[in-house]
Image (tube, rainbow, N blue to C red; front, side, top):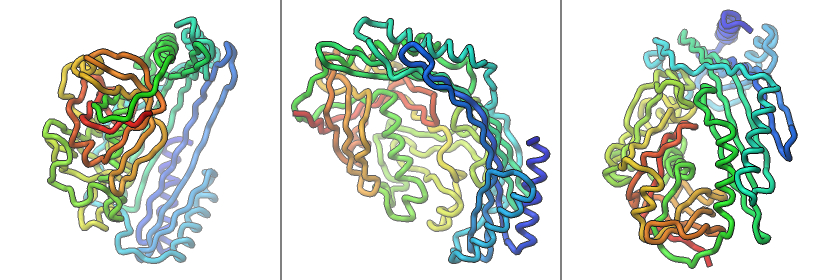
Length: 440
């Protein structure tokens, strides 16, 4: 469906909602298409195509809310879906915090964030790349004798959000990925690891054969894994694992957690939650990044800001609803955060930090989710490497790292300058002091 047609249909739905008695309404129309190819055992295992579309509408009638969705974008279907939303609103209780974000907060000036870069990738080329990626893993080391597959994928999506304030915002995005999981075996033991790359632009992806090679080498590096004695030690999170620590902060400062009083950072505004060398900024207007947008899920203008300033909590992540529940103003985070940047404290990354460690654990993968955001209790299974005198000694597995997030965040020692940019959290390696490492 053409953009002009989508806009006119969205406007028709909003007008229809008003005619039926809605005080306010908002619609989202989205469509997407793409494909992925998976190679395993040196042959193409699966080819998946997808193409979808959806229309959703939310209406507010005397502070009661109703929402409905359809995949049929015909005019009659959109009007019927609008009527269904009105019907549902009549069945729900009124909530004084319901309603659109204030009209003066709408993002009236579009910003080109360079998010749409279709990949002219035909199916034959994608299959060849997937096969070559897996082959690179299998040839990386004789101990790599199998794989969980190599995948090449690309997608393109278009979405439009409009509401009864007169706001209309459109977003066109692309995303491309290459991944490989390799399996290595030796002396009856088997280990696996993966490598992947994701980007808005195909030219920003890592080379597919390098991805396969790295997956194979990393799988081999875990062979001979040992258990370690339970003790307290420094724990170094690789960039892949470090993002999860930051996500626990965002969960705790989200409006939903705060108004439900289900956050270990409740009432922590303007207090030190981390050491004074840690700063987290939100940068929603980065070009070609996965978390970039000039308006949030309610049409509110996004803007760069600081969430944690030299260890002090300075901002929450609020939608208009959660903000009203807290007696505050929306921060433009309906739908989540937008590009969190954690400022490094070092010029180097993982390897440089390892050289500074006397004894400790490098975490490359986390297992399970033993995190309680309400009280901060933290317990995760982990795999990685044991470090002594600044050098990796051997791989370790079947261990647990534990503590409380309030303490863990305060015990951050350094942040590396080796961040990955394949998600909406840009964070390097993080070294934590004095964590409980449970093994034998």
